[in-house]
Length: 362
Image (cartoon, rainbow, N blue to C red; front, side, top):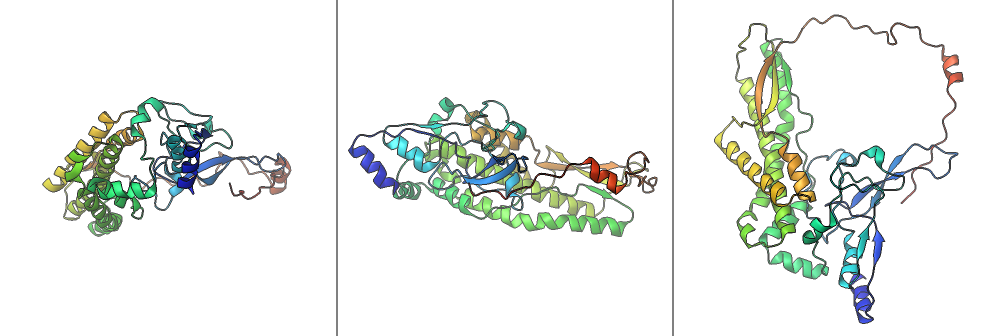
């Protein structure tokens, strides 16, 4: 096992140096750009799952959103290698060198820039900045002992181990009033997603709230950044979701258009939270936590994610618009009315595609 290997290396004063891949931030799976090495087969890139993390003994990042599409969640560099090899290097006096052919610090690395057989990581961070955020490179039992001595760390790890909680994804924002019954039905249907998510986000926020009063006793920048980011992000999604539901309920109670031609209500994100003092207070605290992370942990994964979360307003506002209820009939014939090629001509113009092999286990 890892502990025995470390003991043997120390016994003979053997430092271990590793050149390896970066661990993805707060997750075990990354995606490698796989291109079939045999040119006789399809050369289009495929994205293969690989176990490449996490960077710590246990996950320390709350899992939010992308429940039905985990592969689309942006993956970023943790600043460190996978836990076991990184700890082996650290505890024997060696170094784990993280290597990626497309590393760019300070900007997003686009999907098309990723080299074949490299992992898809969108952001990288300066090693000098990340040095003070090093994970706890200790044995698992020592890690658990440290958790037991810190309620803040306990709550963060407990929250990170819970099943992934979804967030408000592509909510309906446009409601055309053809008649009162149809509008009420559309609003009720739109409320269903928020009603399902509300209790899940509230429960996750309650788990994290337990650790809040122990912030002043925590001295580790890594754990403070992780807790503040997680609690702030969960509260932000909770406020957005509850606010969305409350704004739909307000519309169901009846709202009058100010302009005679208006027949559509559009819900738009807004900085103001106008559906109750409780949500307003929670929203203000979420912003406070996220701003703290963005300012105090700039140039780190936590700071980046806090900045991205702050770009999305927490409140909502209703805006009235006009929708043409009798639009002109669409032209159903594509291609500017040019006649389509006969099927046999189409077949002769296109070469047969190269065969595609299933992804190998990487």
